[in-house]
Length: 315
Image 1 (cartoon, rainbow, N blue to C red):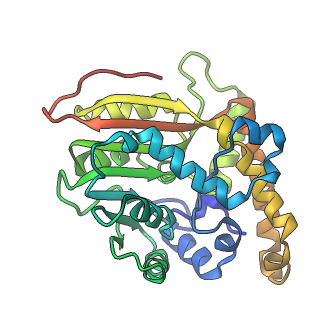
Image 2: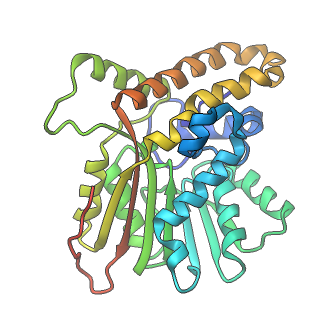
């Protein structure tokens, strides 16, 4: 199947193949959607599920569980009323956008953006199939959004940050379009903080492989993301966590779903080599999360209603 790193289609420029071309290709091919469902992001596994064996959990259900956990983490569930306008940055084929639109109800409207026209077409078709009229999808660069300032009550970004060549601009753009008092939440793959302990040669080589194999621009640490949130000047009550333990099973689980159901790949000989390489890369990601070289960054914040930041940063 196509690599999860090629699916976002949310920023430019990037190494070849470009995010929109790669995303268009896998969307048309349909293999990744077959295995991963509508949600091309990692799943969530409880400590008990890990103890019992992660393979016993439905792979796609783990992704829905992740969205529910991310909603809770964002503080969305504690709001007096659902956000009227939600932006999903790097929406892929719109699985999360549609799930949010369904969960939040008709009083909320969810907009998903991606650089891939094929993803927009697929996302729109799936929304129509489900009778959802409170969601829409647009082709748009996350680093140069066309929305006016203060447009959305909530900005949601799930696994799009790792694809961004300019992480600071990415955070700034999301904060710009967020309304004062609005909620911003982000989930993204991160490298470990190297401020006190620089990366050694082996770690650097491993990161270079992970970045080059799936054409990521570069990874940064959770701490660096928090600094980008702070530097906007108007994001407050910033809080971050590392969810590596409850997401790490996704890497190997994604390999096993292919082992259990190989036919979509077997009948396409032209993807065999790519699939083998992806399997190796998935295992390398698992090991990098397991050793602490990589982490799963979760960051949330509110936009100040007074135009300046109240410093409250926890890591």
